[in-house]
Length: 484
Picture 1: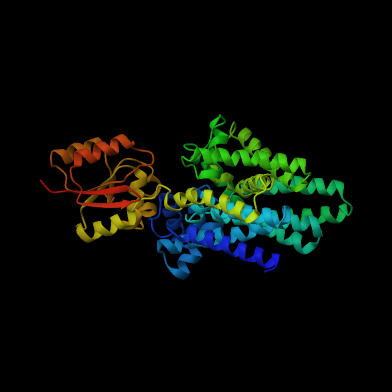
Picture 2: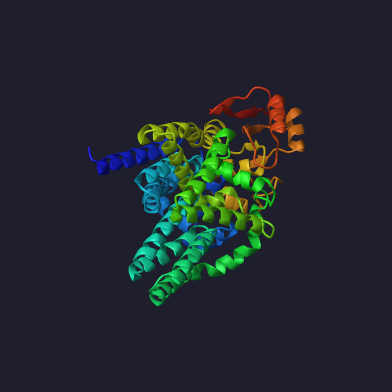
């Protein structure tokens, strides 16, 4: 078997492995709140779609794709997640093309394997949000930038402009991708011949991207009033900033710290090895990752908008440098390429499996089915917090979140017209003295309004649940409160 065929089968095996990891638990868990909110927006009429997206402080592209998918194939959970899954799989192949262009086939395959098994990439390939699309478009933009540097032609310039326009319409942090590429293109422009031609094509690409964003500009201006929406869990400019991002890059924010430290060490080693071997492209990638993280750290002093998921566009570049570090060790230790690569892949499998089956998602879908089958139409349903209320409302009454609750969905207050209420001290007291009848749903974890200790207390005071839905050793308990 010749070398070219070996690489082809290796790439095919990596892509198949990535497909398996992303498909393994794709429909196993119900939609989480962010996914449910996007599906609710996408189910609205076209005339209401963009104003609703504006409230989410997000660009519209992925919401439009979700709406088209729901119109064509329905609103099953796996259907809603299918675009993220497909973009996640496509990202593996595009990353291989990028990695091969920046290094060689061996490093390219190893880097591609790391992305195929990346806990962060797997997680967002299973979530019905824009992040998988964001990753795919970022990789495509990187690749087209390389092509544009090599070819300096109109066709590649137009393609780059279109992709960058779509990129910013998928996630606002795409502007950092475009800005980074602009710096690289400027350096090429100053050092190469044919400056006028390259400058004209670069300006044309930027113009295309700007024209594509122009129809969304009025909505974007409106969204500036909502920029504090993520402040509750956005990163601060402190010592946890880099550790939060790097742990998300390596273990999906899991507890496998040794593996996270190993990745960071490999990144530093890969950068040092590239410097020693004068691999300018890999050095540029390493400096781009470090420089962008430093820029984002400075940004957090002025705006609380940086989260690890928003920095997803740096993940493949980080893994590329890490792969270069792993490959350096393989070569220095005189280990054959295939056994060395298999060792790295096997070490990456466990965090990948954990990412595929985790994510804090809860069995709202099954709980809603049970409540519809066993409950009366007028019985109230109580849960622990407003996020859990919205998730239950989505499956019990899909219109509740945006039609009944409207702008009040973040409140912990209970409206008499709502099907699902939030558990308060007054309701808990009423349940204990048998002045309330209905259902109580206690999830295994809550987002904002209640602590784990309070959940344990609720479970202890409610007695034995009438139904329990277990998911990876975590249980959602349903209690029936009979009439007095």
